Image (cartoon, rainbow, N blue to C red; front, top):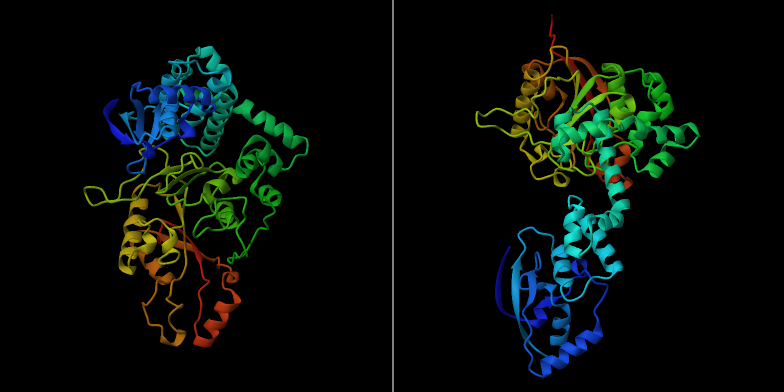
Length: 476
């Protein structure tokens, strides 16, 4: 912990209530300090730290009453120690300094302990107690409910990841825990589910149970549908089963997946699972985005390993952070070294050019046409090297034409990326299609004004989208 002493303007210092351990300023004490200042009394330097992201602005760590007195007497500059806490909690440091002249009140100690723990759940009761002048037992009592909520949050994450078949070593790494802790929590999973199953048996709806217990709808569905076959699951979820090679929905099922660019219907994922996998199979989603696939796998009783470049450990612990980058030998790297290999891959990459502005800057959606197709070719070859011979691939993508700028009569060959481009790459990399299923995007995304403009300019829009299902058998 480093520091330097210097003169700084009083006006550049602020009292940040987020790191101030007391309930307020004692104005009687400020008045006494102000009289002392007028009488020429010199105080010890106040302590401050630079406010993050605010150049030249400091926040108080120690000396709020002295600072208030300086302001009231018109002092323009004060001697201050500028601290660098080197990652230490500023609230607890300020609390440590505050209890020197006067102990924190019971309310102040409780409030500081709860704020500190809420900001950093890894803090121990002993560390907090030392800072606020209280025993470890007292701090345990202050934060018992917060710790219970945090513990439940951890249990829910572990339950979710375990339900999707993620190995314990990866769960531990993802959650920042050791494997013994994971193993201990896994033993609590049956008890954790009992109260939810009890509410379900009493007639509470999925949404009611999810809200009551702080679970997501798909997790509750995974309990409610346990033991049912796929037909029963579809019925309970209210999804009609399409028995032809055209799957069409006007909207996504909002219960599954986050609001995300290029979000796809959970109904589509469920149909892929229904026809091309079995309950308990392992599904791989290499570009999971808003989490529709893992959510649907929970409801459909499949395991799922999901990866995405966007890291959301708190809201999406089951989607492991991974960017499909090139390694030193100019090959794509594989995210896991586990022995398990998927039975089914659901590959729904960001579509070329569509919503490129909404995705991360590293998204393949913003690549050139040539680079986009080259990426797909390298990636599909990588998949083949890391899966079983019996693994199926469900590749989801859409025709792309620059129809927004070009009348249909002026469009040229190879001016877009169409289904035959994907089929050429798939076959080249050793994937052979068995089904091409039409799953068009809803035409409702075109409003009346856009449709009118397209009609005037002779533009033919695109709503085509395909689920291409493939295996590695070729003509064998």
